[in-house]
Amino acid sequence: MRRSYCLFILLFLNLACLVSGAQESPYFVTYDHHLEEPGNLEIATASTTGAPRSDQKWFFAPYLELEYGVTARWTSEVYLEGQTTSGDSAIFTGFRFENRFRPLKREHWINPVLYFEYEHVNEGSRIVKEVVGNAPDFSESNSELSKSWNNELEGKLILSSNVHNWNIAENFIVEKNVSQDEGVEFGYSFGVSRPLARMASATQCHLCRENFIAGMELYGGLGSTNGFGFHDTAHYVAPTISWQLGDSSSLFFSPAIGLTHQSSAALLRFGYSYEVRGFGTKVAQMFGGKH
Amino acid sequence: MRRASISTLFVAVLLGFASAQNVTYQQDPNWKAPAAAAARANPLADKPEAVGGGKKLFERNCVECHGADGTGLIKKHAADLHLPTVQQQTDGVLFWKVTNGNPDRGMPSFSRLPDLQRWQLILYLRTLGESAPVDSQARSR
Image 1 (tube, rainbow over the protein chains, first blue to last red):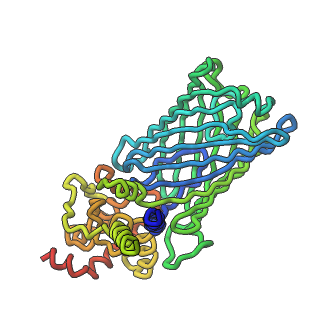
Image 2 (image 1 turned 90 degrees about the vertical axis):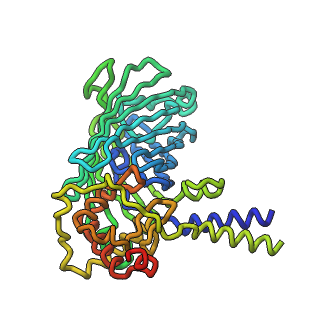
Image 3 (image 1 turned 180 degrees about the horizontal axis):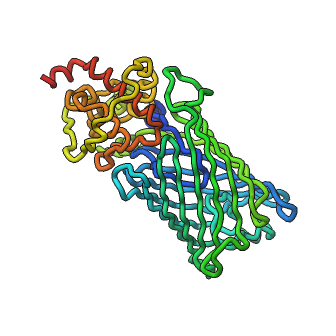
């Protein structure tokens, strides 16, 4: 027994010695063409806090994200999410499994990425990882919302460019709820971002400009096949910033402002990510593989 | 029991350092920079003070595959950056390779880094060529 503990601790220390991280995109909703490095595992936790309009309630929706670089052109992610609403209960709202593929090997002016996601979420989901279709109705209680579970398939066309140290990304979203007859829903997201410094200093520093990337996101719904357009849809504009705390971890913050009456008045988003380098190799070694 | 723990410790440490120098590295013949990219000069070539930042970026982004000393890890099929086959490439070629990566061989793209940071990395790679380890020097002969 002691031997097992010893082995576990040593393997954990081995993993801990290998943690490191690349500079992270500051986006919460928009995806760019930079995938997770192969064999690395990113563990992230984030939350979306919704500030209400007069007929809405405050909500807090945290989620856990596990992102793994399967290959240099394929990244997989799993999300677990929950939600609590003021004066109401806290509920688990489901999980998401997504995959992103880069069809082209090299960097181009525009770099496409194909995105496929399966969601098993209930009507109480509030993490706002994307906005599609028409604005949801949040007037029901969590106990009612959590009874209705949906299986949804989502696809995105991600286009992303790096131009003079600016990243410009456009996401076009299509979602189909296969549990209900809502038609096919559409959404969009745009993002621009830029590191605050182009060169790295020789010393380790926390507050120097090179550790920050600032940007702006714009995202919203575009209705569905039952009614395409901006009518009764939610839209947000969101400045966003990421701060690389060290070699292994980053913080993210984005206050989003609702642009239509169907949007929340504001969304406050916080995130923290931690990257474990060589995770795949370590796991393969534990099970005797050569990876 | 104590001997078993020591054995376990030894095996675990070996696992951690099982990433030996890559003496078997063979360059991918299909990983070629376009002529225009190969001809680009490093804009930081006359700023040797920028190499310190390059070292920091190397430690942050490259050591997991290329090792802390740049000799490359066999299990990652990563290049020994001291080798002449790497050092004889132009700055422009190395910049293009860092920017684009080689996904089929597991080398990710580092285009997310600002261009000057990628040039800082190239500055640092050149210092590895100047301080080739004994094994690399032997192999280059």
